[in-house]
Length: 473
Image (cartoon, rainbow, N blue to C red; front, side, top):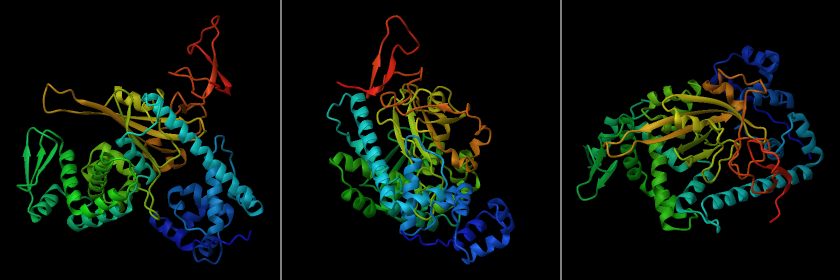
């Protein structure tokens, strides 16, 4: 297998300028001489495996979008498969490259086996969901279909995102986010009147009078979002309809839910246009409070938007995002990381998001480690949504956001954590029914694929022992 040399001078130069670094500063960071870096930036020298490792380590976000050739694509896929294996082993690009060059068939087979393994895990997750929902057939409900549709698109819808970004820049007059006044003026130009009411639905549109009514009992950020939703459903009606009609869904109910979800996606993209939001997020090191003030959005909206920054060639820091209610049900979820969520409630009780539900209005930070050895820096915040009447209970839930520990330097919430101490991480799992940990005293259920033994003469916190052999019905 002939390995084509990779030249990435323009990419490195653009990266350096975007970070505001001089050649001498970047060279020092990479452990090379300024003259060597100058030759690399001028494409007089190709990337070496060692330099590639250093760039990937120091700039994981930018380096994930560096274009590669076909051979390098196999190298990248093999490296990803190694990193996502159950027991990942430390390796260098040089070691991986040697395997790919000398044994390409082995590398391809390993990639396929890893993909089959992940498929098996997903099937086990669906079984877990079916058991939890008392649904032996394992069929998905309409909102689960829509949730999985967004997950399969990596929570990024390119057509809508770019259209919303262009629209936002057109009406915002060079501001980071369009103001409420600017959005109302656009509606008025379309002949739509806006009125506010102290009761009724959060948002209601009357076709006969072309009137949009917003409930004033909600926050200003909520009102902005619902005005933006109506604009998005109007301005991008054709795009949303086309995507919905071509989506592979089993029911019209799911298709209607997808239409609403796409409207939500476009509304968020108008208020937080991709390029400006991505730049601000990087500059603020993903400080949620700074971002929500800049873009006039809620804590949850900002967290959700951060999980959508997956535009090819301009990705953001890979994040996971979810929302959990008081009962522990995961009502929203997406992961651009290797973290997988329980498909039906029952999330790990050691996860910081549960503490946040109980203690709202402050940000909780956690360093956690999954059974596959991958560590995450996570934040969670409990949120209380007030109602417009004493007769209605406030809605309480928590949102969580996190990234893999490799991206910790770009995540301001990691600053106070000792990332090197092996005792710092909290060892969590995905769901008790599929968690592989056999030493957890917080288990609610034994794993569904392992046998257990019970000794009547001995009782620990968990009243059974998990065996290594698979369960046999």
